[in-house]
Image (cartoon, rainbow, N blue to C red; front, side, top):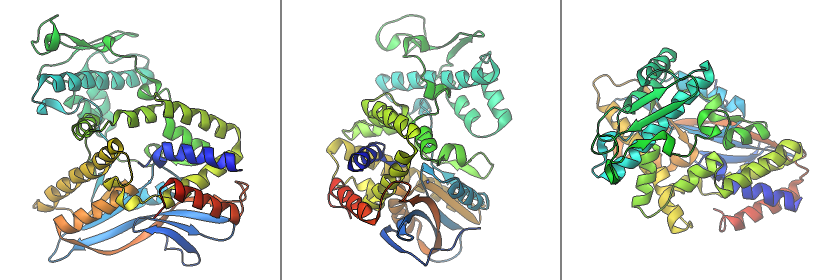
Length: 422
């Protein structure tokens, strides 16, 4: 039991809980602990506990204006959580949602050639990923990038706009695209815009990059989706949809995240490598997920560890990076604080408009919401007026082979691992 619990805890910690998502009334019949405004763990009875995530409602402190809901989310949770959250979000006039945008969408913001090279390589890869996914669906690559964009426009959503924003390299010239039924090449002619060249003038080509991964092309569901399936849960990207006309992506690009972390002295690449499975931690997570898939009781134990890790983590102040090594602390400040700033600036723009909607929701990982609320109150002059809890994960201790004593020992172990808990 102890060995199994430690393995589960290690994976839950390594994957960062991968949050990092008619509304039911708050449960009144159970004790709860590890509370914050956006997360609580409820001890329902001697054999069951539940992780709840909050939706908190805000209104202008003075005068009139739209209501703003801060809706916490988790990347893996029960299908009913996403169904209830979707129902609430669909009823709002505008939803600003989390979703780090694809590589290569930084455009011409870069002032120096090294950054232009990186962003152009990212744009090449993004176009190739979208073309490869289209190939998987139809059996052929689109003949041109414009054909790819038109196909995506026909299905709706933001992907077509993302493709169109990535059609040029970072020097402002169209990417060169060529495809047959089974081969694809995407190129840039570099800084000088001519064939060949050296240094920053050198051509940049998809064929010079590492091959696209299964996670990129959609052949591999990815770690988070596999973990959700192994635990009998749902993956947010599969269960929660943001493709309606009232939904607007409000986030940084992958390039911007990595560049900001690097500027702060950190390294965000390992996080993306964990999620695509290419790092040692990612490979270790795949190994343990494989065990969970073969041993159902291990999945019940992992759910306990997932919920308890969330309880023991100071999730409301995640962006402060307290207790983390310097590189990790800088990364978390960018992952949480910098992305929150993007949302608040988008929100300010909406609020300043002449035709502001009556109701706005922001849906982001629960770890963002402590800082997000502070900014909403301080910078937009809003005040908290209400809210409700949504049940995200329910755990049966008996399925995990645990009693109440085992749970208390697990909680103490995780508090030690988290540096003393809350």
